[in-house]
Image 1 (spheres, helix red, strand yellow):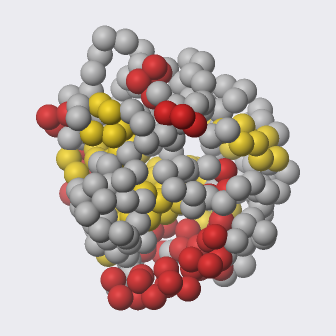
Image 2 (image 1 turned 180 degrees about the vertical axis):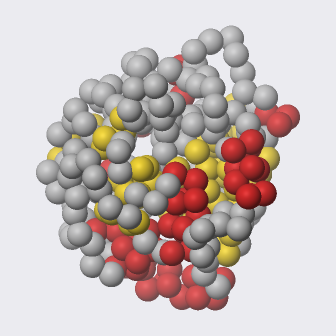
Image 3 (image 1 turned 135 degrees about the horizontal axis):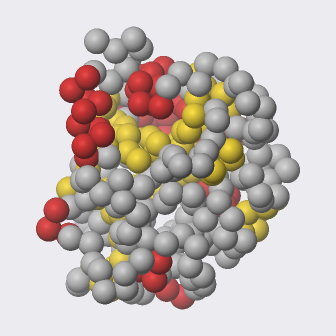
Length: 305
């Protein structure tokens, strides 16, 4: 039995370590989530109080810097990243001393491309300075625990997540490679008969072996109800289906990213340069969601929820 009230069971932890993901789990009632999202939308569209003064994070077909860290200006999201049902499960994986270092929205509108297969160990792949955004102690593998919550229903037809189980322990992509951002690639590239891309980057160019190809036959689709969440390592090969446009409704996911307090966050960077935009990190801070910080090498910031 887990020492955390909502922690993962021994069987769940075994499955997580084998597959690199676990879930989905219920968090919000579907009707409750729909009402919450209705109230949230005006706040999401307005970024005047966001810590990064860049374009809106809900542009069709694009994820960008304005969608980052909205837990600092939206109370619902501040409460969300500290939800005990989430934090207990993450703590049962990483230990009690935990920080949320980033959150971001992932909208997918009718007709939007699927997200191409990718992994993230240091999050340096699309960083303009190619410097690691998270740095584990020497010898530790790296990555972050991502908790992806469906703020709307996520189906195969509207672009739900896909995982290739068991791929989280080996990096098939080299995040140190230089790959240019090109907005013209968004919603224009077809792979295996469907629109696939990575928000203006060709992620296949990061492959360690250019002749290697992810085994799509092993892919599993993460169909989720609105209000459910799933937990996975960022080093797990993951992507998403395209939004086939069978409905006019957008699919919206919200990802919160967690690491232990001993991991260094943005250790070498004073700004972000991604997705064709730039944002100063002056106002960024990690949020201590569980335990204590014994290391003092990260900047922290309080949230109001």
